[in-house]
Length: 177
Image (cartoon, rainbow, N blue to C red):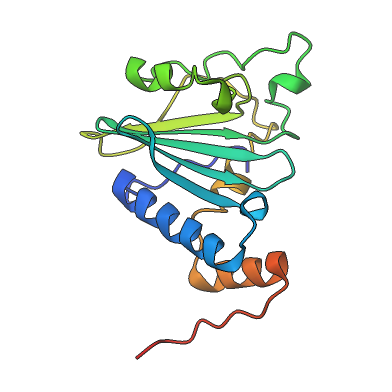
């Protein structure tokens, strides 16, 4: 699958809640910050909240929540859409087309590596669905969105399987009563 767009039912606040939960679980399961896959900084820059999924192998999603909405910038280092796979070492044309100016300005922060992008999507507060730029990516090219967004959109059982493998710990999903 070349590209995965988030379902309209995945709201900015719902995504933020999910990331808060995943990052809290990572804090519980790993005392070592550098080993964690999920991170949240609720006051990253003023009133902007930063979420990050980092698999430690060069693949990331940065999520920036503002009062106006949320922006997701994903990077799959093995994707042919990556600037590293291009002779000109440039962002795929059209990748950031249409991104609201206030969200684009946030990507100028050096820590976010604006040029390291293989997919980008956003949703403004009044939007009913997610949007993407006008990047005309060939059908045969995988932008990494399915792989990376699959790290966020998980069932409890999928998370349990991943966490048991990653942390090499038995994890119970027993219901607390």
